[in-house]
Amino acid sequence: MASKGGKGTTPRQTGPLEEAWSLFDSRHLPYRLLMLGKMLDRLSVQNIRELGGVSLAEWRVLAHLELMGARSASEISAAALVDRAEVSRAVSSLEAAGLLTRMDNPRNRKSSLLVLTPKAHEIYQRVSGQRRDFYGELMADISPAELKLLDELLLRMARQADRIARENSEGAKKKP
Image (cartoon, rainbow, N blue to C red; front, side, top):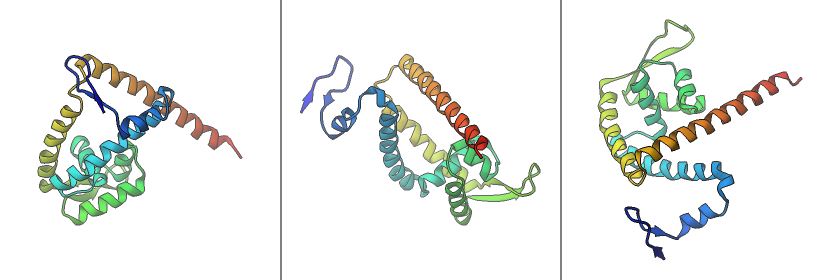
């Protein structure tokens, strides 16, 4: 059953999404963010596989290397806020596919720097252009001012989460 939205908005619909969304109220915003994240991951997995022939984890490594330049797997893991094992598996796959190479790390002899190949740069260009279009479509009903506010609010939440994680980590180190 659909009801009409306001002028310039997409008509509102009720269905499984709205039902799942309403299970918890706005005090459970992290749950809602996780739901949205899972929805976006599902859309992204299929799209990235079709356009780039890589997995979502591989894409994340590839994109971080494109944007950050040559980095170690640990640096990518920290920047992407993902488990080192996930990055390690993605790096192995990308290396086997000829999409990245390793070079000596002058900052740390125990690790290598990961460097994208020209083929990986081509994949990044192709996929990232489509991703920008997708994000544009996703945010079509959000004004620039709303987008700026949303970004600021999400950063504030991320800072709080980071603070809590650091405090928990410090507390765990102090326990015998």
